[in-house]
Length: 273
Image (cartoon, rainbow, N blue to C red; front, side, top):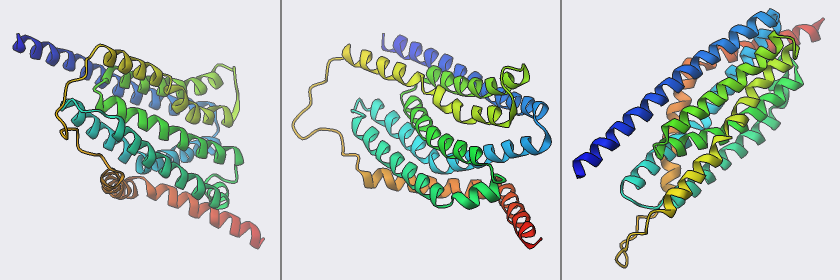
């Protein structure tokens, strides 16, 4: 009997992991379609600014929010395997994520002039899309960590597909004439993570339903799960953060620095004239 249950769980895991692979591949394809369509409906300057905007968003969210995603997925999976509650890790991870989001918001406001003028060619709308998109992705990455750790790979795939579909829809709306201009295309970058969060209520509803059908196991006095502290969670997240800073600096920071330097040089040249 136990063997049959294990085999059924393995088959279920394989199916959901396959769905996740399809979801990741489809999300990547739709992202390619988004930029392909954007390149045809915008002129070179406007399209280049959208690419810079997305690059800045991607580097920021990968650096800041991937650590908490990894922390959640690892800790929740470990606790559920040991049939331990996950409330404390969720609260610790949420505290870290909110702190990182607050640091970003304060930094973005303090650096508004160089971000807006040098990186985004003085475009105020793109600046606010950048700020809002990064904060929205913070919530999205938190949801990804929860879904991955809970092994809800089908919902994870739905989240990724909802995000990429929402983003490409804005570019397609411009292509068919429903909307027009750079702003309409760029809004897809901020709408995507916001709309992808529609799967979160479903995920927590399923978790509540599952818990309602499971009787709590009796435990001996003093045999509760080990405490998951902010110090422990913060240490893990900090280590991943260092890795992500190194990775993004190597892979993606160069083009953004070049763009910022060009913006500064252009402004200096204009002032000299």
